[in-house]
Length: 410
Image (cartoon, rainbow, N blue to C red):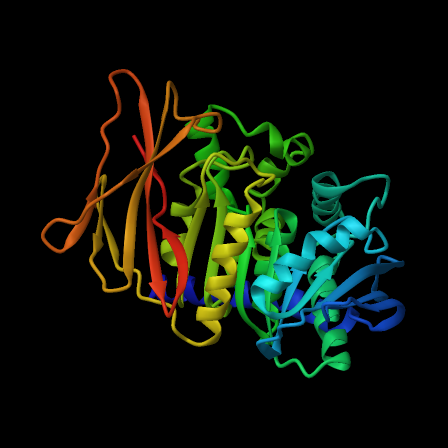
């Protein structure tokens, strides 16, 4: 009876604090926009640049540049891709060119939401700004303070605006780093999101992630120093810190995140550990898939690899034809069941003198099936460590997409 009561109280606590985000989004979003420019190219691609106000946060109005790309070959007319990004200037021709070919790969309305978050604020940007708002929340207890709240409201307001302008029913949401974080939270509060592809935010289950960094690195990653120097790792062990986690850690929204997910990570990401996905991936519900971009850091350079796979995932999710990716972990061994849709399987592995693989070189080696399955296990060289994962290439109705198993190490 005691265990049941404790579980009930924890569940109620999570619901209450997660409701803070939903309430904030509902009461703070705004739509006030101006069309800056519109252009149709000779090939029939339509560009629209909009500036809009999403909300007022802590007395500060948030404005965003929005670029809407309507490809000439529009295969999917009732769905849009919403890509959340940071600093962005659609008045520059290169900014437009960078997204044109991506929109053409998706064959759907492609929307780039910029200025998430608005910055600088309080003289701070990016992680420094987010960490500052976390500390202020712990002091003031204003539930609207965590910067992820207005960042999420920005994405929801953008979807509202797009639906005013186009006959769009649902959204595929993506973004990288802090915008990947925002992608998770946007999906948790808005049912219009039918699938997501968060990029290089391999950090759900914050407390365990921090513990794993200490275990594998002997210290926190220098990339999260904006949080460390403000005492956030210690603060989250307090009552108010626990309340904050339930508001901003997507791990506490798992029950709301039942849509298909394509989690895109980089093997050499300086922010996280190679083991990070294992701390949340198996707890997710719904259809969940993982992609590692080998030999890339937090700022992924192999954009074509990401776009090719993400666009295939988008089309398969939209047509409800995502394959079953059946794999098991038996100790240190990865077992993958054969399937008619599996075309290739690869072992990716890296060697390191320590359990820090951020500067290691990843090698890709083909794997052949035996007795109806693919088996992967790698032993490290003497006195060294090895990290490894499997990449499985599926082909469904001429669409190729790679899915990976969470990386292991020893």
